[in-house]
Image (cartoon, rainbow over all chains, first blue to last red; front, top):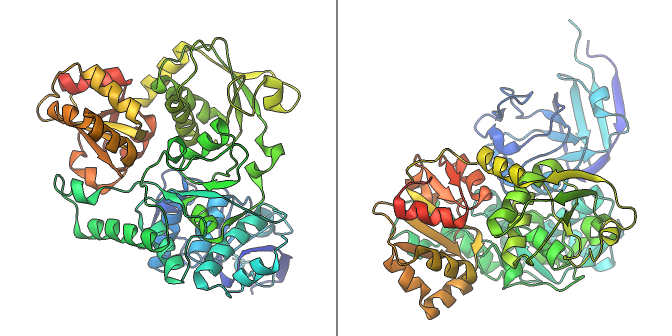
Length: 142
Length: 405
């Protein structure tokens, strides 16, 4: 079955809570290069190209791109209801923080372990930003 | 982060929902950067873009009752009154442009619609703590004027304008304003164009670090426009909110002062050939053009005069549009002093309040343009218009011939 649940402390950047399947991006992302209609990453040569962020818990290296396009990217995904359920950031940067606040995208950082070690694609993840806790249940084997 | 009782009340919503949202953003930023507390800002500049995302944010704050404590100046969108007479836009594009003006007026901004606030309309003093967004403006106010601003986004600058404060981190602190790597410049730099090309070249290499430029020989002092172009391109190809020029910018009286101690070896030496190759790499291949576009960042009054001098009374070739984007005050001066009328007679149009990256220019898409600004070319590319990048005198020749060489 689902395996044990591991809990990690984190730090709240944008409050709220969300849960979903994990999607891990070891590369920074520009949210403008997502299709707002589906949440699918359309950036050429991005490791997540073709995958949808919608409803996932995104484990993200960092943000990239100008502030205008990043904010608009978050906004367009929010309007269509295709934002990630929560975002766990490894390296926080100001434009990413600002963009998340504008549309109330739940965001945490400083997971007590390297999030790339603690969380893998497809794990079930609950982010409770209010209480600064992330719970991870490994995906079913086989 | 330490918050005063008044700041806590703002965050709790006791000053209204708009102020609460603005404060949430500032506190999130402050936490992310381990700011110890908030500090007052005395000026702000908001790089509104006329895109949905930031117009939504301004509307959200204004609808929540927020008004700017520090009235910010604003970036251009596009001059609806004059450009709709010339070019077609869709209903939603027009509606968004009008809504943008309406929400920024309501929140109490100064509607300057100009991307060069540091040159004329919103000029900070040395050491002043401010919140300036706009990629060309942030490096200018930090490096040339010695004011202190982080690399703000339009949304964080607006939040600071509403609250009148910003978290104390980054370039507000002495230790983060020191140079981080040395660039030796051998290339001769004559006009804003050359400084812009240097900026693009070094920005690619810099990431978000603070460069210190050391010149083999700097015979003439660079103009404010040249320094503006340097920062605009550094902060477009890279994410550079501040630079130093040894012996010239105010926080770099000497190389040692620029680095705050030990001077590292040069990481980069820039030659004339490097800049020529950079131009070649950036520019689209030469050919017939449908548009000459100058003013990214906005042309100053002095640059408008320079265009008239280079035109030498010749007319722009039929079928080619020649636009100079400028600030409202420079445009007014050009009206009073006669340049606008004389240039119009030659086929050169001036427009204020307008950015190159707006839907009003879409009738030129699919064709080739020519500009003196790599930043212009970079953003127009996304909208489907490639640009030949050339110095101003060559842009003027392209306008007369109908073809970039």
